[in-house]
Length: 197
Image (tube, rainbow, N blue to C red; front, side, top):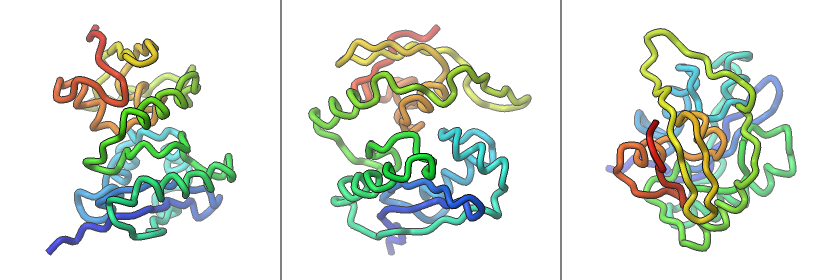
């Protein structure tokens, strides 16, 4: 029996009303997208610094998770973009770092070359919310603080920093970056590992 639920979900701050919109072809369960969010937030290492800061300030009990729409895996990407277009109108009432559906939590989705170029173009010049901030180092943390150089082979843009800084700036799913670093993927959304310092 397949218990996977595919659809659009929301994480809402019950105190401020601010929210995060996401999508996944596996929202619930011990390996689902919600559990990924919760584990990251509890460990203070979530890829979205705005959501992480709010979680730290208001506490786990003041956040609610809800499924906005169950939909088949095939239609998930286009519907997520519609929800993000609406969320963009709320501006600062939304925790999303990007309003472009990149399929971050959607395992197995493949973008066309045209879509990859559009995503890459939209992200150029975006200022990271971590710019000017130090990444806290935790004793006994197994986080990767190595410095990597990423290169966008479509735009020739270069980014040097930790994997955390990279996924925070470009709102990439951590697994995609991990696969680049480990050599499982040669490129992701036009990005390659240029060198490992």
